[in-house]
Amino acid sequence: WERVPFICFKYNDEEIPLIKFIQSLIYDYDYRKSDNANNLEDMPNSIYVLRDYDGTNLGEFRHNLAAYRAVKVTGEGGVETISLP
Image (cartoon, rainbow, N blue to C red; front, top):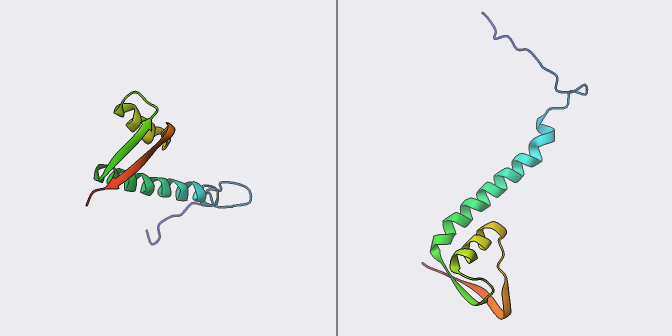
């Protein structure tokens, strides 16, 4: 063959590329993947200081932090992060 055959398949009648519809989803996926990678990289290098934690154990704290990105505390409680070198 002198040329590779190229067959166009229309996605829609207006011939708008499919990438126009999913580009924002791709950007969001890349952002979240990058953010998750950064968080996983930083987690072992941090120590959490808990005051008046409204939970039963540290396993629950780690689960809530990973799943909800939030922790519930009572009264004057709080969570501080100490970064290790």
